[in-house]
Image 1 (cartoon, helix red, strand yellow):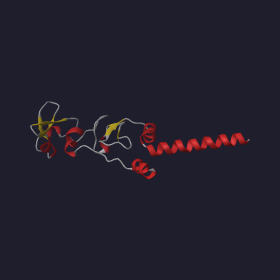
Image 2 (cartoon, rainbow, N blue to C red):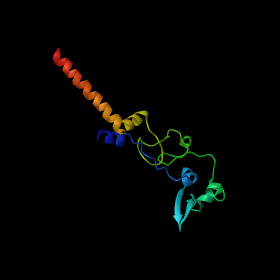
Image 3 (cartoon, rainbow, N blue to C red):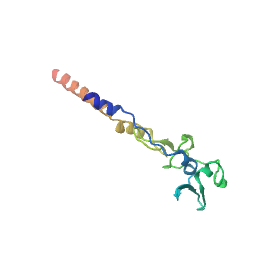
Image 4 (cartoon, rainbow, N blue to C red):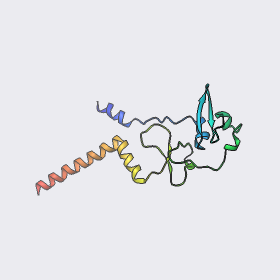
Length: 141
């Protein structure tokens, strides 16, 4: 039974990242939509072109700018494209796509503790044993 529980706790979580066909469209801040089975990238002026054509620079070239950064909360494939003050992040043991977030070091530490059951239970166990030893030592004095 213990082996079964440890296996479940230690199993890595598979990440289910978004299909990279959406990468260029979404990272540049445009919307992706499906119409009659075809995926389109919809631009700020409401014009659109098929995602594959946009990715291959076949249409929408005026929207395929080279200088851009990805705003907070938006999905990111290339971590160095997050706008200043944000970074690519997904909480530990979560499946999905990284997003650009303004996240502190303390929040990352808390997330590692909160979303990692093995670490959480290890820390709680060590603290419990330490408190127990301290109580026994104090009573013997």
